Image (cartoon, rainbow, N blue to C red; front, side):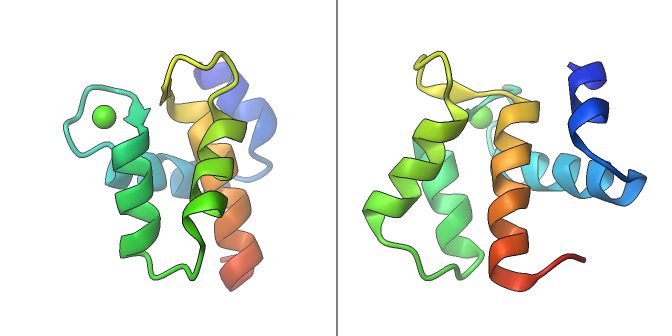
Length: 89
Ligand SMILES: [Ca+2]
């Protein structure tokens, strides 16, 4: 997993931010993000997204449709949407 994370993230700052986003969302610390955690995380961050948009982001990250997302896919999508909403850190 760490190898994939390093390939997709271009900078150390991005890798650190991706891990932070993931750990903030993973409330029960089971190593995956379920939809409830995902939706709560996006709402808490004050993003003005509809329920459909929040669902679409989760579905894009949940490639194997097992209803939970591990660090790399979740963090990549969360980072992408964070950049889209607030610009690069
Ligand atoms: Ca979790």
